[in-house]
Structure formats: structure tokens, C-alpha cells
Length: 62
Image (cartoon, rainbow, N blue to C red):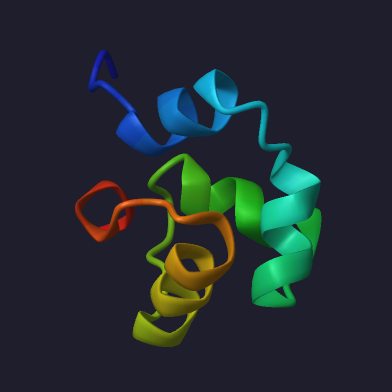
């Protein structure tokens, strides 16, 4: 429960909204929220899109 969520921290630190992430990976906001909160995994394609579009380090996305 107290696991550090590096992706969520990165998004907040860089003022990136979850809606923007959802648009980039072409998913609903609720699906994206589940992925960001580690309840579901990002696909390799989604990881690449986020890295290319927002320069999020891949190690944060995995």
C-alpha cells in the first residue's frame, strides 16, 4: 500500500495531467488511472508513446 509510485510522482512534478497521458495512449481516463496506479500494466507500445511524447524515462514506466 505504501509503495512509492514513481510515475505518479513524475507526472505531478512535471505538471502532466492524467488526461494528457490518456490522450497520448488513446485510452479512457479510468483505464489510464488504473495503469498509473499499478492496477494494470502499460503495453510496450504505450510505454514507447509516452516516452516519445512526454520524455518520460522508460524505467519509470516499467
